[in-house]
Image (cartoon, rainbow, N blue to C red):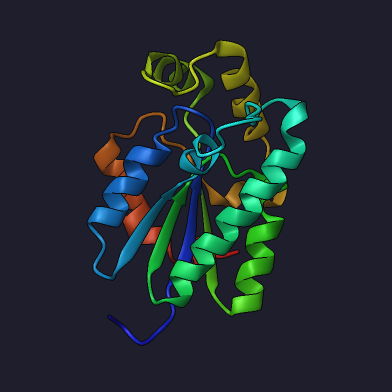
Length: 181
């Protein structure tokens, strides 16, 4: 295992953007020891009192989960693993990650996968299992990533890209100065 610390790459975007699929591919094809943290897992572990994270009543739950995620990601990175964290981590959710990497002296990268609304809805509503497939929350989360202001430079428009093309773009550029926070 390398002697240097790992880094944290947050791969985010609306539901159906391809975050989990791309994150898994990036992690599995990495040349360094790499961990894939799927934020949904941290939510489904809540057995009693779970509130869907897109609801206003989930604010305290989301704050706790994001703090735990930041600590877990930095724990792996301190242990010399690169971390690919996928989930809906908008600008509103970045403070615990920024604080943790600053405290630990780690590099933080941020990539927003943002397909068009039509592509997002088509992908999001076609998912199976416990995944969110409801149109209105998907639209709302797409809207939340629609105008990121100073973070707009971290966006990859994946509307016309295959999974392989998006994975390649993230591998080539995801941990570069272009996407460093």
